[in-house]
Image (tube, rainbow, N blue to C red; front, side, top):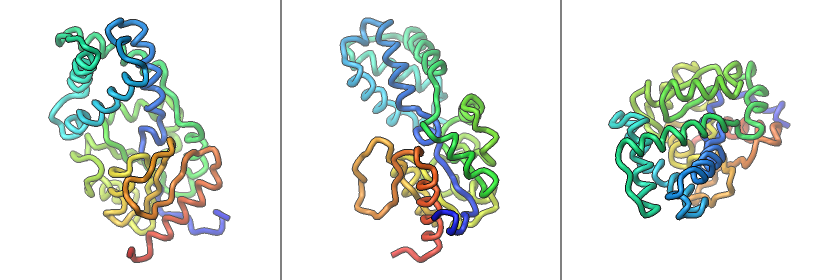
Length: 250
């Protein structure tokens, strides 16, 4: 049982699509936007949402690197989405579409099912941290909106650190603030590259939050969790991986 396992010095969570349900919030917001903008209905919702996700992955690193503001990145995404649908929009129209989408997105925000209960279960027993790539104000607002801020001991955001995951510095910053050693810490997140490989590269145990049942991109033996609906089982996986991180890797 999990209770018989040593409690980690710290448990780090990713934010988006681990604690905060970005994927389904975004899809629903895009669905509402399509109903309001005829151009976007030239593509199916599945195609539209898939292209938006691709553009987000392609453009967001420039925000993390400080090369673009979040607003500029959003405007660019909607210009590219318009082209994807066979149209063209200027800067002003892209900004308007971005604001429409943003309003829907904010109204539809929700946690990943079971995430609030998982954080509450761990709080007070270990240091609970969020390590995330985004803007500080954006991520703090999510914690407050979701009602989980009281369960989180530290929030480490790429904007304030100056680098994003998987850069070692952001994990090292989180460890320093947590007062924990890498070998007694575990990270859980949905991004294989950012959360799993990034954490392992600094000696932190890693658990893949594989919510949508994707195939692992590499043949590594990484424990995975597909949902927080079984909190005791998730805790056991996290605690076991933290203990395993103390052993030399082969």
